[in-house]
Amino acid sequence: MTHTIRKATADDAGRLAKLAAVTFPLACPAGSSPADIAAHIQNTLSERHFRAYLADPAVTVLVIDAGGALRGYSLLVDHPAQDPDVASALTILPSAELSKCYVHPDHHGLGAAAELMHASIESAAATGAAGMWLGVNSENAKAIRFYEKSGFSRVGTKSFRLGSTVEHDFVMERGLG
Ligand SMILES: CC(C)(COP(=O)(O)OP(=O)(O)OC[C@H]1O[C@@H](n2cnc3c(N)ncnc32)[C@H](O)[C@@H]1OP(=O)(O)O)[C@@H](O)C(=O)NCCC(=O)NCCS
Image 1: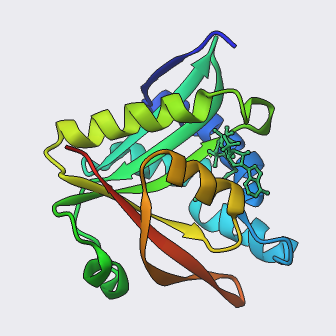
Image 2: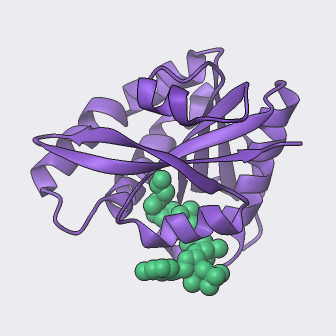
């Protein structure tokens, strides 16, 4: 795949929403309710939501752009962790949040995710962060393995509400030095 990794702009909001609708379900545990997944997409990952993320100065969205088709994205948040479980677990501060990291399934296992991670780490380091943290569903073994390969280690847990159920996320962090 010939592609570039670049910062997203407001023009990408619609395509990001379409990509997010394909990739978010892949991160959910097998037993998740389709209705809860659909509601989460509608409530947090619509074009309108991406427009707001892209307009937020604390947010950076990076995309894998393959000739105009978006094949992956990451979303970084540059402000202190609000969740008290996360705040108490982190050991490397200040820490940027890797809030979203998703690659289209046609491009899994091909190294694109590692390139996206590399660019995300560089972007966070450039804002002055000393560390990066993320939450990952405790059943998402593939993503956990990918994050371990990317230098993250588990430092705690947090809860994540998906519709009517509470999911348990691992909190992972790495240094950027
Ligand atoms: C997470 C994601 C970005 C990683 O990208 P990727 O291209 O699949 O990553 P890689 O292939 O480099 O690494 C995945 C690793 O998990 C391993 N793996 C795959 N399926 C696995 C499973 N069911 N259990 C354990 N490990 C698994 C792979 O073998 C590989 O490890 P290896 O290189 O040591 O063999 C991508 O899979 C994705 O977008 N997934 C869907 C969305 C998601 O879950 N995002 C993260 C939300 S926090």
